[in-house]
Image (cartoon, rainbow, N blue to C red; front, top):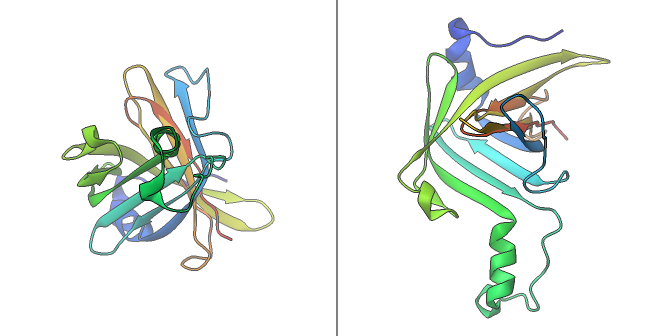
Length: 181
């Protein structure tokens, strides 16, 4: 069974997303759904947090990023710093949820300077699955002119008892999935 939130439940989406969401998958693909690849690897790790006072933070990284030769960030050489940054996506700021279930991330701080002051739009869907037990995923989808990205998330077990997938859409489709642990 699959249940997708509709316009009449957008207030529920505003309340439902509050909490921490663990990354299950981060995919990029062409508009027709072909050429799926994983920008930060098939085993990327991450978390997205939505607060009740309408702030969000997203942190996604390659799981195989090389360690620095020392534990001191300031002592990292240019190659180490470039490798660390190229395998990491991070941004934060206030968010809003529209009546058509689009979450707008208003970026105030970002690893990518070009995003600062801009907005990242994510179409959001709550997907309900029934298997041996009922669970949900939050899918965040970012559809763009050339393709998209989908992020699938599950709720953090510390905050939720159900799994949720979030799809974000924008210039490039992204799929993400989250589950509880």
